[in-house]
Length: 354
Ligand SMILES: Cc1ncc(C[n+]2csc(CCOP(=O)(O)OP(=O)(O)O)c2C)c(N)n1
Ligand code: SF4
Image (cartoon, rainbow, N blue to C red; front, top):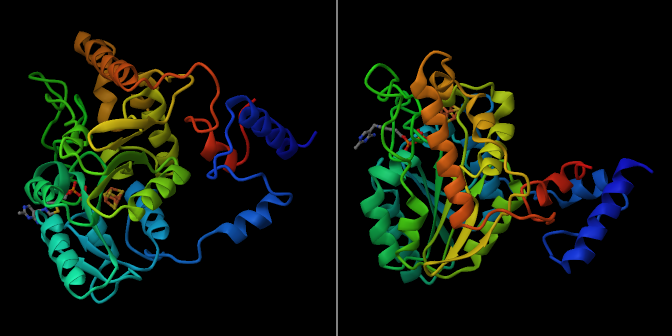
């Protein structure tokens, strides 16, 4: 049996078993390649030809988000890599109205844009984009205000876990023990001392209608969550895990693989929250040891030093953090689910593993 037929059979079995007729899992077409091409969105909010590094997770994530959001949007973009690599004067890679805000006020600018559009009776949706530095740290006050005042804005944070644009400084989102230029490992400590801030929970405490985490490794998940947020009148938030080959120290060709390991290990859980409650998670069937994720990145290389006892301790610490996520969000799923970390996107990308 050809592998596409085998995959179709397997998907059918899973659908029947789980009683799923989920619209996000269409029937496998008779001619997959042709139908997939036809199903590609024609609209691109962010064009090719920008100046991002090869394999930049943020560039791909921003393209996926803007594709899914569609053409009737306006964007307020905080200072950071995304703003810099898309707009080298006099060029722009954006195909939608786009405003460069300051580093700290993308949400405040978006609030004003939304209020102005509302006053004009227009339904154009406002998006706000920021990196983790611009969101977790310096722009948080403006973001909190925007959520509290219930502006009809979708805020998207492209989380590459450091201030990349200015030379890889640690942010509130940098994971514990990671090396950055301002958290170098040495005698005093093993990389960043503090924990990654649990931003999604903080956002969720604003009781907004919808907030979710997603990852560039799962394009179908990104699209579904963007479309969901776009339908909602009111403030919504997406946190998109977006590896940075330069700052994380990995080969650009491995960006997707690395983003996937973060999710499959439990270190970056994919969850959805509505009005302060967790409503859905992407289940993990076979949790991957955290070390598999760490060892392919230079920013964690010191955690594998053979003669430093702190290395193993820190690896165990990070494993405990992933186990904690798996437990509190109930991520572990014993049985295969078409929507798990090896599910929907893998199916679309060439078949379920046997
Ligand atoms: C008030 C202020 N402080 C510092 C800067 C310098 N600055 C510009 S971009 C940036 C880092 C951006 O980091 P992040 O938001 O994580 O986005 P990334 O570049 O990683 O995508 C910094 C520190 C600034 N522009 N404004
Ligand atoms: S430094 Fe990182 S985030 Fe910035 S363009 Fe390069 S890969 Fe992308």
